[in-house]
Image (tube, rainbow, N blue to C red; front, side, top):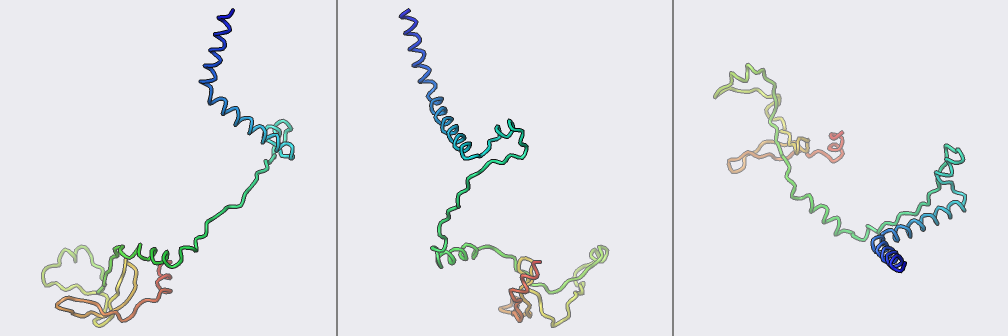
Length: 166
């Protein structure tokens, strides 16, 4: 008989050691049950109560709290400077368009050295300056140190650039 009692004590001690997580869970379960009881006292229906009562449109009451945000205006101008510095080294594709034309494949295959391709622009008409395929300016062709360049004569306003995006 004493051996049985010793075994029971040992097994219950082992169960406590193994089931330490269960003790925590039971504390959490008790806390949840207390919250449910408190909600019932306040008149809030649970899903189980609604099912038992046959209420198909039962709604549970949820307590909402206001969101708390930190003040972002503290950064000031240093943040503005950092944000512009972030994009200053992004590569952009700049294209100066002399003109365009459409050709048949047959005409394209006949092109050879000395052939002339007629473009849609007239001589003396301003060239278009495109940045990432968006028109930003117009200008005239100049030669600088034996290289072609473009002198900008008309820069597209920011309002016109935004309208091009639409």
